Image 1 (cartoon, one colour):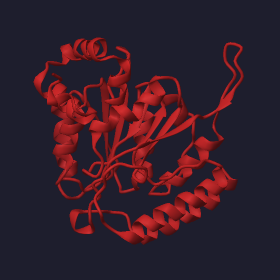
Image 2 (tube, helix red, strand yellow):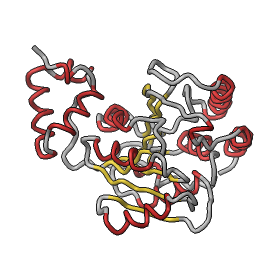
Image 3 (tube, rainbow, N blue to C red):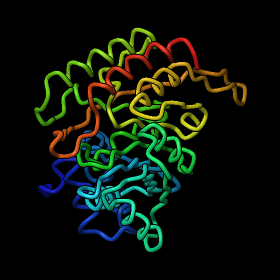
Image 4 (spheres, rainbow, N blue to C red):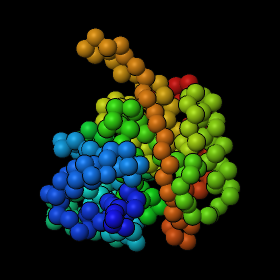
Length: 291
């Protein structure tokens, strides 16, 4: 009988990271593939991850003292080789001082500091420059998104099907019920973005965006705040890989996969406001026509 700990990819990831030493992860994965078969394991989110793969996780941080310990713990627990990059955007709630201490003691963390608050987009630009992994993923510093979903997010890239993967809060996974107008605004901005990019995304504003490193480091980003989302979407829609080894160049292959969402309220420390929605609207029009 199959142990209940194998009932889902999230539960499996937790079980593997807690009860098994890291050196046995690959052996356990191979055991499951051998005895359950690739089809069943694939449905559970279990598949072969190359030994030499590194995922760079870029985490912009601004006043996240309440959540920062837990999000770093969760990212560390994901059974994938990782480079964890934290970029403090001049926090004033004690987060900056904590990260300064971690920079001295936590060797598995790459930490950068902004001398003045510049916004999420600026923090991500700093983090992308520091990324060395083959795959780069954006992770917010709060607990709205679950790092246990990394394996399913990176899978289309590992299997050679995609160059970029977007998560989506609107295609099947569980989510916390919060603000109707936020949801409506997100869907409107996504629709408008799709009109100009000719992509059929369902959630352009989602945090979880995953890139082959050569894509995100091959794009020049300019937006400092939440305009990052429509800007990066417009630019990956135009990005082309050059011809290589006799193969013609091609545009980015973009996939979308459902992700769960535990949205926070303003009392929980949510930063985005209606003003950022207006700026995102402006960015959609701006980057539809200029770089």
